[in-house]
Image (cartoon, rainbow, N blue to C red):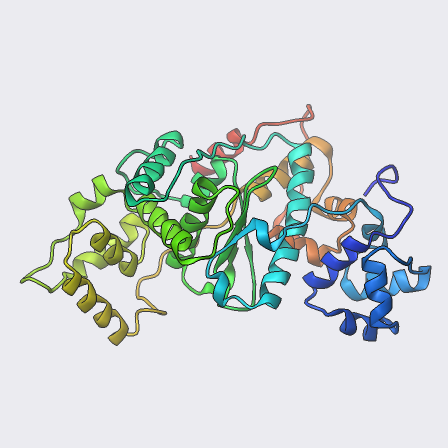
Length: 380
């Protein structure tokens, strides 16, 4: 944070974000800082200003530089403007910490968006109220993103990031939060690394993409919007034209060819469970076959631990941006962390990029470098 951008007054909303990111209540922070919970509340609402010693104590406890608390208020991720998968079953405390993580990540994205030329946002917006609208919206995304109408998507994370949506992964320490997303200056999708299944994480990414495409300005989390986003994920990952062609029809009436389905799993990058649901949506299997299949999945213990998981898809856009900042501005990740007022530890957590994985690179001439060429080198 530069001296020019520093505010002379302690910023209460920044304290709230930092506290929630640390999963602390006002009372817990107050006990550690030897102040009263009421004083913490007054600080967060801008009613009182902490002295130097209290400021230093708060900064040390929360893991941020002192200067972090003297900037302008962050553009906070608020519950009502974010799309939470399974909102009804996600505890409020888990959501608030995830939102604080998103607010900090959004500050990093805003910094990088100003520093380098990130891919322009290319999110089509379409209604996904009906099944046919969902199918067409998914096909529209595929065509705009150059993925083909009926082909498997090799790397969905890369495809989404190429469309200007920033993806990050967050250890929510709870399986009760799958993922969430937020539209804004730039679309952001946050995935939970604790999900334990790469196939499900990929489906979560498709689900949140559906919210950004079809639910702009809407409050989601109800049964209808969640079903619409689920169907979008299925349509995006398993396009009807290609999937209908390759899905193995049941043998002897209701009996699925499980070996054939698991063979398709790495090709289409979807769990067998998702493929069976998609087959039922497209009427490739009957309701009795669908019911029998899910009973079989439950009996085999595949609901939580399906065999033959997929390789992980790691976000690439933020690491590429940080490499560009190093080359064009001679600022390493630790410099960026200091500019934002974060400790190196929190920078690694929020950015999803361990500092040890950011080797030094010599800076070329020029100030802004388009990221497409770096992505091309990685995928060549």
